[in-house]
Amino acid sequence: QKSQAWSALFSEPMSELVKRYTSSVGFDKRLWRADIDGSLAHAQMLAAQGIISGQDLTGIEQGMAQIASEIERGEFDWKLDLEDVHLNIEARLTALVGDAGKRLHTGRSRNDQVATDVRLWLRGEIDLIADLLAGLQSALVDLAERHVEVILPGFTHLQVAQPVSFGHHMLAYVEMFARDAERLADVRRRVNRLPLGAAALAGTSYPLDRERVAQVLGMEGVCQNSLDAVSDRDFAIEFTAAAALAMVHVSRLSEELIIWMSQNFGFIELADRFTTGSSIMPQKKNPDVPELARGKTGRVVGHLMGLITLMKGQPLAYNKDNQEDKEPLFDTVDTLKDTLRIFIEMVGGITVRPEAMERAALRGHATATDLADYLVKKGLPFRDAHETVAHAVKAASERGLDLAQLPLAELQRFHAAIEQDVFEVLSLRGSLEARKVLGGTAPDQVRAQIARHRGRIEGP
Ligand code: ARG
Image (cartoon, rainbow, N blue to C red; front, top):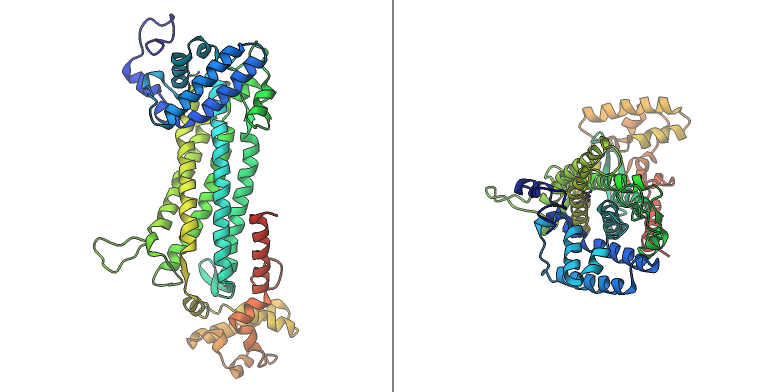
């Protein structure tokens, strides 16, 4: 039995400790479907090239069908002794169909096999994540659409800056998640290439038709250098980088939700099912879900560091180090998918408190820039207008008022050109309406962006 020693070459069996240390089946069994798909495509090609017989192919296909159903039904006996998913499936195949099973590995190594499996698996996961990213964008666009006219203070340095539409604010996140989706689509093209045929590292002497295998597996093409095909995991690294960025975007949104939910802001409420209570403080409702998402972002960023460090010292070609690509990659996928799923639901359950937002926007002289722009229209150079308004802000602050609350006579002390129409300019709504520039926060702009996003997300 192979599990005791690899071949006649070995004079003693592997120690239990080494067996457990080197085994990956505990986690790589989740690649089983990709492993079977890759094997079937390989076997069909071997038969078409006359390398194995049609009878062998039939045996392999029947055996694999049985194995798939055993795994699906939870009846497959995964053996630690057989190290990984590949050897487990191959051993079972041989037990089921005999010599045909032993011929499957012709012209193939676990090195090109595992690289193929991970790529096939990851491609499927990227497609699921793309759907979730579209779902989250839709949820955010819905939320934006319900609140185009709601005004909150926009911040820079977390200091009140200028009023913005809550819808506009939400669309900022839609842009981020749209770029995440674009990045993933781009990564997918490089994930979707076929290593099989590279064999252990040098290629193979069998007349394999690699292009055919790539086509059967729906891949864009073959990896063109055998050494590179089996050894690099850059595709996993760039996927994890894209995933880490998506998590960073979720984390920024989380941070805002947490701040907005604090009693000192009171801008939003999360649906109760996304919050938790305290075991000691009866009044508490805590935003655990966004906090955890923020925390889990650190974990995914850690996986990116882990993977990129895994690669950096490896000489060509395959090294067992690469077995360590799986857990961080799997956990990245799981974490991102769970997070996106929960955010799609949570965003749908956000209650906005427009009065609290407007009240906050009325503190902090959010329309000071509008007054400066007003004076520019009256002929002042912008720098002078800026200075004039700074004096007015100082006077308002000293009196405990917002700039917009100063009486006209008072404002006119700072510049004679100020007239009654200034109050429209100093209003939150006036400030918003004025920002009609493409990509600005004017409600009409925001509505136009919502329409664009809808067309883009839902497709033609
Ligand atoms: N379990 C291994 C991995 O995940 C499969 C490839 C093993 N190849 C080898 N030559 N030991 O990378």
